[in-house]
Image 1 (cartoon, helix red, strand yellow):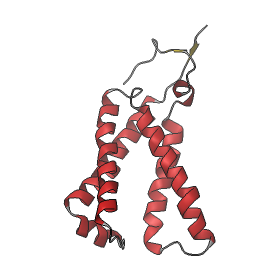
Image 2 (cartoon, helix red, strand yellow):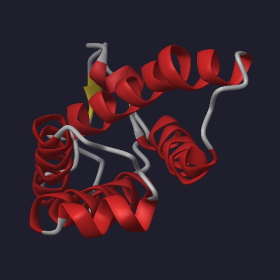
Image 3 (cartoon, rainbow, N blue to C red):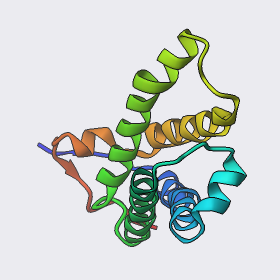
Image 4 (tube, rainbow, N blue to C red):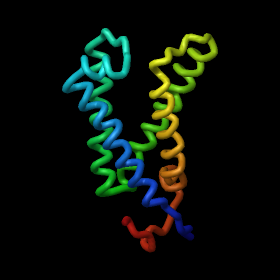
Length: 143
């Protein structure tokens, strides 16, 4: 017997748009004008290859989120990946630096933005759908 699943379509689309604008825009900025972005953010990034990878990944998140607007459930793994890496960043980077009083002031914006993504993704992602339970989606409407 299949259960009905409630999907927060609006939240999904909000998170895709947020990713397009913030991550996609940020990534384009890194790729097109890296020196301006480093200066604007106060980032002391001296490694152009790693910085370019960051920009490329963020543009890819933005691009895939455009596809997510078209087919929200098919592209939910994009939001799940985003959620996972941001949580891992908090656990593996932010908390250790805070505990040793080494977290730089210029990173505050990153903390706020990453936290907003974590909260939004936790609300938007239909976890029961992702983890394989069978649901009747025929009554659902992708707005």
